[in-house]
Length: 83
Image (cartoon, rainbow, N blue to C red):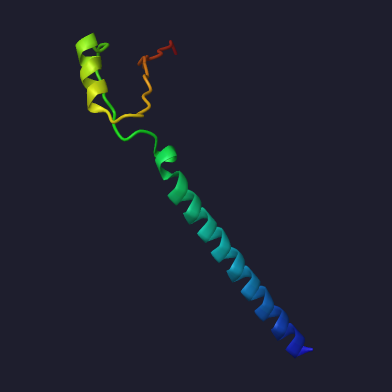
């Protein structure tokens, strides 16, 4: 009886270790292949006003071919209330 228990414990340990290693390797592979998409952009240009046409042209000229851009507008607000 003790021998079967020992075999069962060893099998469970091996199965658990295999599962952990498999998940870790799959996660690492996914991170390697999707890192650029997950991180978003490599460059951020921020300003307090909209860029002029000349500034837009200069930024576009500095970017490599095939670069995708995203424009974001943000509005900072603060809410106050009476107590």
